[in-house]
Length: 295
Length: 259
Image (cartoon, rainbow over all chains, first blue to last red; front, top):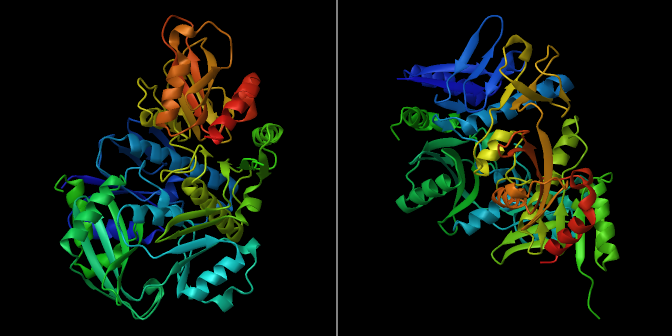
């Protein structure tokens, strides 16, 4: 198995997970820890090789190398302006290098970014033919309350920032002030969650049973392999390809009322480890197959 | 009696181009307003449901980037990102005219901080090398290079001062020409005899590929007979970028916002 380069900070659990499990599966992983790289020296030739190093270690990544990239600023880096600025510059440089590289990249920058803009993301999902719960994004208390009075709703972030999702009722919006906003409300859908990871042309689905609104923070979540209808799997793979992504995590609710799949979002940098464990590391294996040119 | 066309320009209060555009629009009979991002988000609503998409308020729009750096405080940064995300959606999904309409690919067209990647996305060839680095003094550099620090300041090169830097090679003695594009129209900043290179047509084509109605493209003009090369794309031009052609360009911008 050839070398796979891993670009990600050591405080990112998915980065650590891939390094550990891919190595256990026999892959030769060379990990460049972005937390250390911020303080190291680097020379990044866009379209050429990438070099990073310090007094102890120097890594040269060829322009055609396979790379799994999780370009996330290390935790706490923004607390000091100069480190925050250097970190931002490094991430920009790495994204530029990855976009122009000749290798197999997960995910190559240049793909769509609308997961960071939920109303636009949901409008696109609808236009692509998926069933998507209606949403309202606003700072207008009257409109928000009216929306929440007419339906059971959940509140989510508008941008791509990771935050818990929870139900909210009209009375709880009484004290809302426009200066606190905006808020993104979406119709709640009751049913099991289904997470589908696409890697190249493969779709690997996991069902999640939980009584919680947001199973990610629940202690009763049960993860299990899930068989996706073939037509839906094909459509997800094709739509992922159209967005420019090789690896994506799709979130659905399988509605207990109508038996249909309601699309919530497509994550372009999925934290996939809890799902991978439910499918015997199939996602990590699919990533390694992709890097080897097998899918 | 006809209702005045509405225009909302969302930009920092110190954004001179936003001010100039709103002034020009008001003088032309538009109902025009210049709001900061924080002000604009208060009455902006986007609804996505079975009837389609609705965006309020109903107005032509030009969303400019905030000049202020993102807040360091985590809660304030969260609010900053949430507000910008809603304005992004409102501008992208707005049924009315939008200048430099954001897309699923981002807020400011397809231009990136890397000139080489921007050129690649624009389908522009050939492209000069580009290097990002922390310690340029540790290497040998062939020829002359221009380097930019994170704060945008261009300094001597190579240097032993702390980086990081973004650097590209330049030809000794080259000059620069700026071309402002508004959709299919384009204006060169100078009156230098460069007509043979048709920089206006090339610039309009590149801006269109980068999904920009309005941009300023900087070209490097070598001292010899060789052809100019693209040096930089400004996806959100300042009034200084546009220069003395502002009256014509401002009118063209209003034309684009009324179509």
